Amino acid sequence: MEFQLRGEYVALCDLLKLTGVADSGGQGKLMISNGEVTVDGRPESRRTAKIRANQMVKCLGQTVRVVAS
Image 1 (cartoon, rainbow, N blue to C red):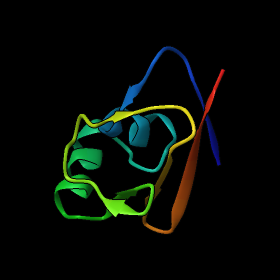
Image 2: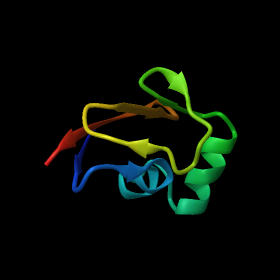
Image 3: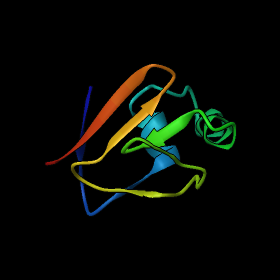
Image 4: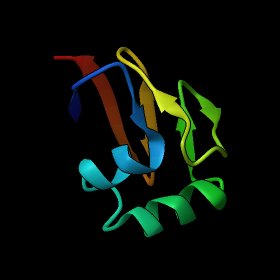
């Protein structure tokens, strides 16, 4: 799926919530803490990692491509 970025970046936990990968911000943070999230193919453990345009986030078999608006 694609996520239209508004602004310079979005926090990783917010991205998971906004795309529906996580039901809530808390669930998104838990997924990140459990090592279930990768950014551009690398595990990401920072909940508030800044996700910018042209990055790929994968979690639980779902892929989110972040694009500039």
